[in-house]
Image (cartoon, rainbow, N blue to C red; front, side):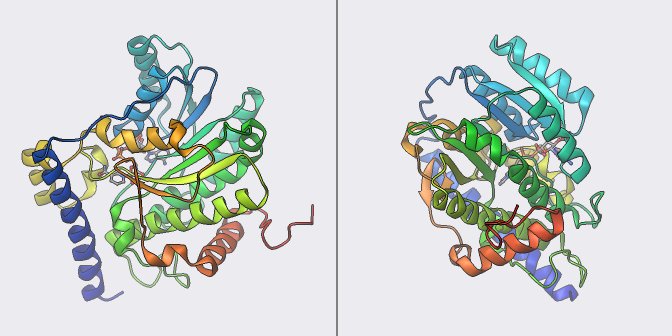
Length: 335
Ligand SMILES: NC(=O)c1ccc[n+]([C@@H]2O[C@H](COP(=O)([O-])OP(=O)(O)OC[C@H]3O[C@@H](n4cnc5c(N)ncnc54)[C@H](OP(=O)(O)O)[C@@H]3O)[C@@H](O)[C@H]2O)c1
């Protein structure tokens, strides 16, 4: 990738972010964001990846307040246990626990799923929230570019390994739900099918945007498969807006300074950012509804190419190869 392409990818990502911040500023001036009414969820079980910080932490707290059994999946055991303890204390919900899962390691994801299945719990909600943004070029344990490997492939594998439990837990009129976090950067993302690992040159902005675009394509294809099987599981995308969290720790220092000074004005708080994923996870409005891109708790259109079934299928097939998941869309009858 030429320096010009790297600069272009950065400018496109910044332009997408600024557009969202301006829309958020306008909304604040017109009265701000309104918290949706969420129904109580006793007896329901949720897994939230990256639930130790930012939007994930706010999501876990909100689900705990709604009386869900919440499993925080994260890659820092000491921090995770402390966060779970704090949420139990603050919400009075004792069914909040931490379980180790490093999304940058397929071995760790498989171990997490085995540990979860040993608990013999149902699973009603899976929120694919964990993520990194604009990290320096580095690889996951399995040798994948980190944005693609962690943000996207890690969640692809996790979801596929949990699908049987989700299917068993969904009921007519009370579907199990998969919610995956994307971002406005997907609108400026490009999916380089011949170079998903950015081997031809690295742009941290381009790699982040690609991972968020892949999550949208994955969700739509997954929803198509679930609907075709008549299963009571739905899959939707949540776009939280631009939210004041530590996700920005790797961005240019000038951007961090602007965030520090004006974040209160242009950015959503983590609680506000969590409303979209909590909405996708629990609202009765979305019962049986999947394949949606949710932004500010409403249905929005994602980038046109995300609706291309051939691209969805091709990415799915390659993701199966990379993770060792059997591609049931290509060989539905084999064992
Ligand atoms: N903030 C925004 O403006 C914004 C906008 C659009 C979309 N999003 C998306 O929203 C999601 C949450 O972001 P955030 O803003 O809340 O970021 P954040 O505050 O940085 O939180 C990210 C979470 O992911 C966890 N994580 C990182 N690497 C992991 C790994 N290898 N295994 C397991 N967990 C890992 C982090 O744990 P540690 O802290 O322990 O590493 C943390 O709990 C991300 O998918 C992000 O792309 C955010």
